Amino acid sequence: MSTVAMPLSSSSRPKAQPVSSLSLVDAAKVGFADRVLIMGRNVIEQVMALTHSGCRSLTSMRADASYPKDEPVDVLWFSGIDDVKTRLTAALSGSNVPRIIVIEINGPESDGRLRPVVSQLRSQGFARFTLHRTLQGVAVMAARPAWLQQVI
Image 1 (cartoon, rainbow, N blue to C red):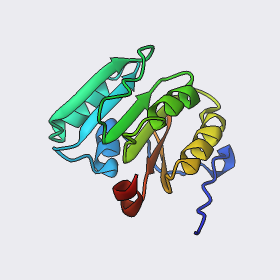
Image 2 (cartoon, one colour; image 1 turned 90 degrees about the horizontal axis):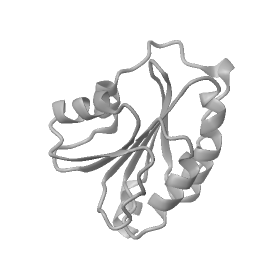
Image 3 (cartoon, rainbow, N blue to C red; image 1 turned 180 degrees about the vertical axis):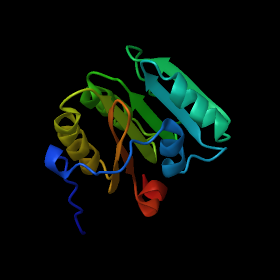
Image 4 (tube, rainbow, N blue to C red; image 1 turned 60 degrees about the horizontal axis):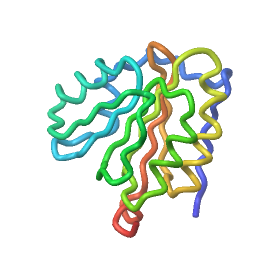
């Protein structure tokens, strides 16, 4: 199995313009039939981008709400969540693991806060990672390989 290194240091930041929520939705390839759960603070921009892209099944929850373990989710999107690792543990411990996870972290030192999250996702079978600069910080998009989505 090959490993892909993803530099997260501030010296390796891409020089590209920050991406919008609509660009993140497009990059995640969210389809109209995907069941999307977005949890966080001030997520109206993400909700609008998802509905604009044609997403027909969207649930939005407050940042402090409990993760709904029995709800089937194809795409999980966290935005402005303080303790992402704990939320991921709840999301990945059930029998219904999302195929794509988007995590937006805002503020300074956001790169350093992503490192343990990426390690946690790798240990759960997520293998494709992309890093995006947003207007408020960074977003990491993680996807499980198609064959693993079929198995687990």
